[in-house]
Every structure is written in structure tokens, then in C-alpha cells.
Image (tube, rainbow, N blue to C red; front, side, top):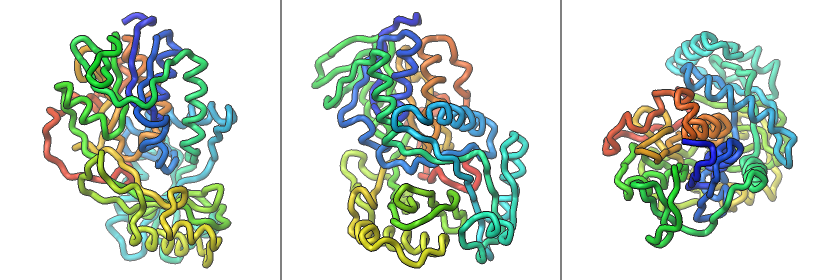
Length: 388
């Protein structure tokens, strides 16, 4: 496909925006379709945690290149990448998690990840967090966090500067022979290629076009606890919860529901049980007894800016679906909550594949055609001990 190809991108989250920009930068004429506001879906509810501490070589490589690009973008517009170590720990009494942690760190080191094993005392000496219940911890140095909304704002601006045409507010359907996009079943334009990066809605769009993919949505939750926290990002493998620094204090999450909701009819507000558990978890790990009263009240009242739920996409093997599903039709979905973290790397790789000069840069393990699309599988959350 030549560089002046006409390409439609469906979905203006972090992944779709990055793909659209990278295509346009390579000379493609890009139209970006989004039924809501850019970043209004899963990206707007993402935690923004970034790290390359993976036990699998493919994951480590993709995450590492994404981290490099996050750093190169930091300082442009209002976007900033905040360097913050990533701590993953197992609690006392959880020998299985500690053994898995130790094995994972060994594998991470094989892939040259800057990760170390530490005990409770050393962890407590380095970071202002509670460690008296820690059996073993890993510390990944190449990590940080960023505000997904700021990333969206930056890439909307960059897409506009690169000549990307935005079609916002229209729900679309796909045409695949030849590639095209329709609004209200009326074909608006034919394209040389169509890229579907619509999060969990990618499944319906592609299935309706005759190309089912193995993708299921699941619901995850997060909140902001307003306090003075200046520690690392922490993933508690025993409790299956996480927290990271936030401008207002701490962003904390878990609340994963391993069941399949209706992606067009689900509850975006946080559950009461999650809010209570998450606030208790933040108190426990940070040692902060009291939060800002207004902030805590907002979280407990499930205010959208302080406590929320979002949808993530799961696949049978926990690898994403990236690449061609048919001639001229591509997908980028199934992130298990890692879509924002990997967006800078996936955008570049998929843009090159669409234009015909970089298919080999997309790992074969991500090929969406490895599944038939009708597989039965259990939903497994993405943030686990080793991230593979």
C-alpha cells in the first residue's frame, strides 16, 4: 500500500489516536471516527501506570519502546511522564505469590529489565510505605505514570496538525469488501484500509462485518484518595490491588469483575464495596490515617472524578489482538487494561503494517487470526504478578 493511502481509524482512545497520527505522519490520508468525545471511553478511565517489568520477552520489548516514546513526548503540550518506581509485593503467609514473584523477577532479568528483589526492611528503608506485612517484593526502576487525558489532548492536537480529519459523534458500521465505513448504513467513504481501535466495541463492529474476534469485556474500578502521598506505584499480588501517586494524592484500583457485562449497558459508577475496600487498602499501605475530608466524601459518594468503573478487553491467552483480520481491515484491541501503557508502541507498529513496511514488527503472538472468534474462555484481569 502506498504512503498516500486513504485510511479510516475507528476509535479515538489512546490507541486509535496514536495509530491515526503515526499513519498521517507517514503520508496517509486519515479519517478518525469516534462516536463520543476523544478519550471518552476506556482511556478516560485508565490508571495511567507504565512499566516494562514483564516476564515475557514480547511484552517487555513492546512496553520498553512505549516507555521510550512516553519520555520523548514528556513536556509537549500539557503532557508529562512522571518517573516513579513500580513495586510489586507478596504479603506474609502468601508463599505461592512470593515464589511466583521470585520466578518472574528472574525471567525479567533475562530480558534486561532493571528489576531487583528486596525484603521488607530494605523496601521500608527506601520508600514511605508500610512493609511490616511484606514477605518479598520486586522493584522495577523503569516505570512511571502519566495522565491519560493529557495524552489524549496532546494527540488530538498532533493529529489535527498532521491533517487527520475527525468525524466525532457518529456511530459507524464497517464494510470490508472493499474496506469502508458507514454512518446510519450509508457508506460515507471507501478506504484503502480500515483500522478498528474501538476498545471492547471492536468485537461487535467486526462481528457485524463478518469477522468475529476473540474478545470479551470486563469491568474494573478505581478511585482517587486525596492525601499527601509521595511513594512508588505499588501492586499487591496477595490483595490483587494497586495504587500510584496522583496530583491529588493516590489513585487506587482493583474491583475487577471477571464476568462479561453488556458493553452498551453497564454501570460506570464505582460499587460501594469497592470504595470502602480501596480506601482501607490505601490507608493500610501508605500509613496515612486520614484523607482530605472533601476528597474522601467525594470518593465515597461515587463522584465521577473520584471513583469510577471502566471496561477492559480480555482475550483467551491474555495477548492483545493486533493486525489484519481481512484484506485491508485491521484491529487493535484486547489489552487487559494495558492499552494506554502500550499505545505509543502499538500505534507506530500498526501504522507501519497498514502501509506495508513493518508487518514483522507486530509479534506473531498478537495476530488476531490465531483465534476463530467464537472461543469460550474465562475472563482474567490484566494486572497480575508477572504481567504475562
